[in-house]
Length: 203
Image 1 (cartoon, helix red, strand yellow):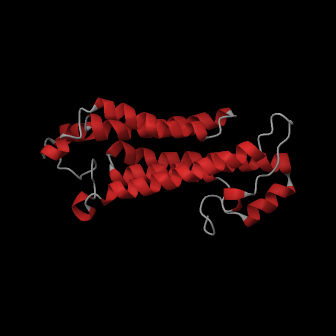
Image 2 (cartoon, rainbow, N blue to C red):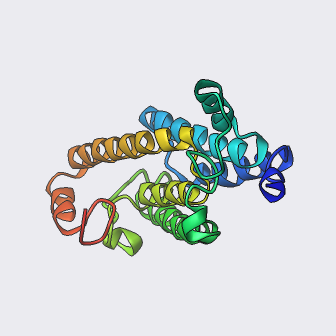
Image 3 (cartoon, one colour):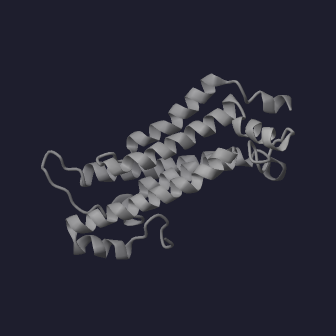
């Protein structure tokens, strides 16, 4: 129990992890207002993760009030699967976060150098690099990072917020695809037929 309690009241760590995971948003597209709500939802998820992991086990306290007793570690907060997989959740988080970060950076690089042509005032369908395999690598990467956080330190707020984030980014991806069809027409339609939205060969 002493080890678990050492996780909390580390507000420096809360700030560090909130900035670390939140800084990923700098590599996401923000050229339209429709991007702001999904980004805000992700940021709220990150803050909830950081506070409950290193600040205070807020959701555990709230649930304890309603049920009248303290919850043990692993019930809707903390290392939820700790008894079954040990610290594997931490390594799963690292692997998923690194994979997600790579997707986001590759996606940002391709879009920045191919679609956003502010100097020339042009844009084109990006179908090279990571975009050869999936249409929305940055959103897929963000979903991987969120999944990793959930694997390491699942809490009631993050379990509730996670499907909301997925829904919002899927909706945003579909909206952007409609915009791309309006901008590029049949060229983008053909690209959509060849390339999956988030997972190569699946969906």
